[in-house]
Length: 264
Image 1 (cartoon, rainbow, N blue to C red):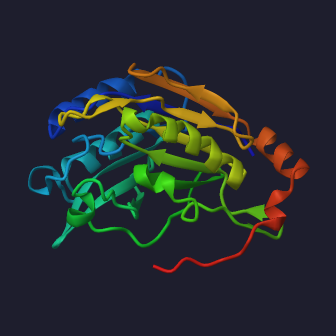
Image 2: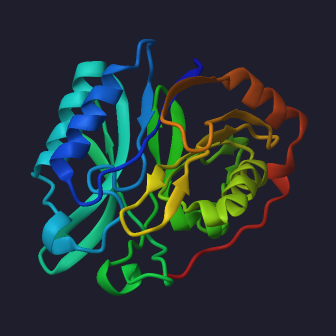
């Protein structure tokens, strides 16, 4: 299996200004100079975090999904991003995994934040997805999902792990940055995977500051990359398949994991 090249884009967002954000990420994605397999954008990359679906929600045929399709094709890399999607009477915070050939897979955020109106306005998802990029199995999640370890729990069966990389796309406030910096490596350790978290920076337009501190941890919980707080960064990390397998083979904790089911 080959290594995986992952690019994280940490940036500020223009609150509820889709066109500005699309133009901004068009520029930032074009700044990626080295080859990459997977590009990760912050939660609600096109509007910033918003619970104003009348202004911000789109259809899957809207401009933001079209933008992801064009950029994935032009840079020949998979892009993960989330946005508000309207389907009939329901609104979802939907993560789109866009492939260069134009096909995509989606995940709807399961855990909706109760300290805002998100849980009243947005419909929660009921299923996880697993996607593949260059043979790597990846579990994508959204922001608040980070606090719920059961939802991301890896599985081991017949010598195989369910997934290899755990991804969180987030708008995580600076006031809770210690939680972010603690739970991301914890999720990597408990699931014996790489874990990548991408966050935004700056004021969200509603008085809440975001420090970013996007990071990638290896299966031992070592931080192999962390973005500078408050700074826009486009950075590519190479994840080693060999190192992951060597660690899993030498520390076979997966064989002793508990088996359980989740009730929706």
